[in-house]
Image (cartoon, rainbow, N blue to C red; front, side, top):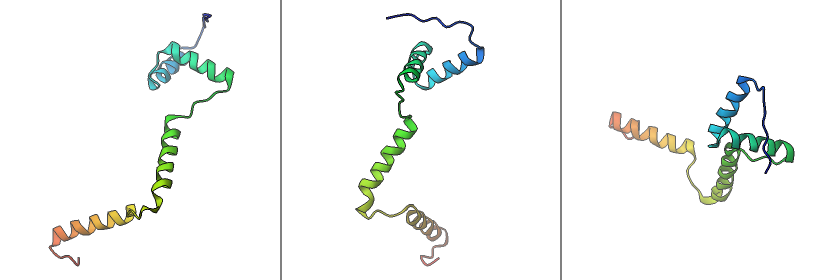
Length: 92
């Protein structure tokens, strides 16, 4: 494999590279390789946030017909229970 040396980078660019590398759990050198690979091959990873959102959407599609209570219904039941506890009145 070849070696590439990049000189005269602004401190802000190097700092951003190190931060990005830490966010992805890689060394700055590995992050640099990944950035170059993505830029030159057009291959882009789906961000972990986008991947999580897609998994959540798929879960919702799979479980849509199970008849689970909505969040609003669960909140209403919780509030009603707390009100009963505070007032002692089940009709409050």
